[in-house]
Image 1 (tube, rainbow, N blue to C red):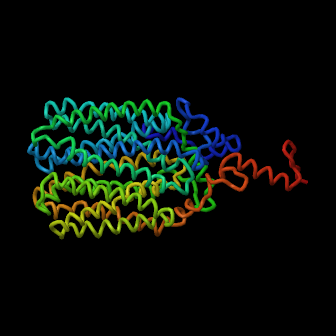
Image 2 (cartoon, one colour):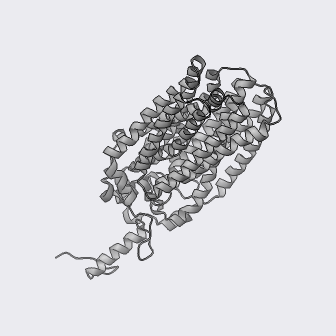
Image 3 (spheres, one colour):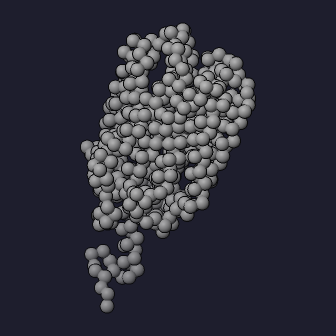
Amino acid sequence: MVLFGKKEEPKLSEVLDQGMRRPSNVEAMNQLHRKSVSNRGLTGASALTVRQSLFPITLVTILFFLWGFAYGLLDVLNAKFQNSLNITAAKAGGLQGAYFGAYLIGPPTWAGWVVRKFGYRWTFITGLCVYGVGALMFWPSAVYRSFGGFCGSLFIVGSGLSTLETSANPFIATCGPPRLSEFRLEISQSFQAIGSVVAPLLASRVFFKETNDQDLSNVQWTYLGIAAFVFCLAVVFYFAPIPEVTDADMALQAEQSSGLTGYVDKPLRKQFKLFFGVAAQFCYVGAQVGVASQFIKYSVESAKISDSAASDRYAIGQGLFAIGRFAAAGLMMVMKPRWVLMAFMTGVMIFIACAMGVRGEGGVAMLSLVLFFESCVFPTIFTLSIRGLGRHTKRGSSWIVAAVSGGALFPSLTGLAADHMDYHRAMCVPLIGFFVAFAFPIYLNTACAKELDGFRETKIGYHDDDGLAIGDVRHDERKASLVHEEKGVFPGEKEIAY
């Protein structure tokens, strides 16, 4: 159980025993360069304000752009390999399988253990270094035109990025006032979507513009540049001011919000919302990747256009995906996130069904709208699933990240269906995945409404009239002092009951 992090999680009694001895949020920001932090100890980061969390969140958002770029480039490479190596759609799905298969192994085992044992900073650095090694491995794979080599390189890249996601997603979700958790992750993931837009454009306009179908040499230079950038970013994170948010901090935050949410500490095996979220995320990500991996071939079949023109259509679809995330983030400032998730999943279901029946440019438009409505689903499922986990937050987060491995299964199944039917009817495979994921917002809006709305109402991390952060130890000390003053008891004196 050590690998899965159980022994690194605090007990609620340990958290409460630290009581008024806990650090303040100012101390959390001042202890930025500790080598590691105990996951059982309070750091004061449970009550970080928006201003305190702004810079570290901005820095981590760079990581979202980074793997958005890798993900967007992967889809174009998929179609490139199908042409240059003359392989079937099902076999090309092996690229997706190698990349997303790494998510099944890392997050619930070693990556999850690193984030609980050493904290977010060293997990960021570890993930970046592994990603850089994987990027370097593309050089020999491109030279020898080895499909197996590309699969192996993508597996290492996926291992690095899964490690980054194991830390980055929960860090963004928990670093700052809890009521803004969904908004923060949605905004950060929007830059991941921008990376997904930039990558296909560069692939079609720069990397492969002057190459024929048999030339893969430009791939090696592309990933060499990525590797250099990633290693430099690892150095930046070594010196960057990154506060640590521990499971003990999240347990305290959940206790402080219990009056609004009805929170009760439970063992992980009874966190049913988490388990449903993992299943929904697995099916959703699988369906999303299934659509993305076949988008270019679908467009060629539907609109009778070239691969280059289809790549442009895909870039438009990814642009809609990015716009959708920013739109969803804006909606979350005025609407409950569970409502936003329900609305966007409904849109996904409608337009994926239309994409199966409509041909020509209309079919491409329907599939592009699927990408628009997919936009907010992953980050919203993530944040809503870890709501109320308390001391289990990091371990639960690693399980949801592991659910990204659904992307290893659905693309191959979609490609296999396309080989035996056509790309329109093959969209029935993603449709099944989306249907399972659609059940999750229904569950949230019926069984978990009070808990989720309670976290939206909490003021933890916001300033009171005295300028102190609500939920911070200094705020609690001030409240206790006022109570004593009302009773005529002053600091240093004891209250005597007669």
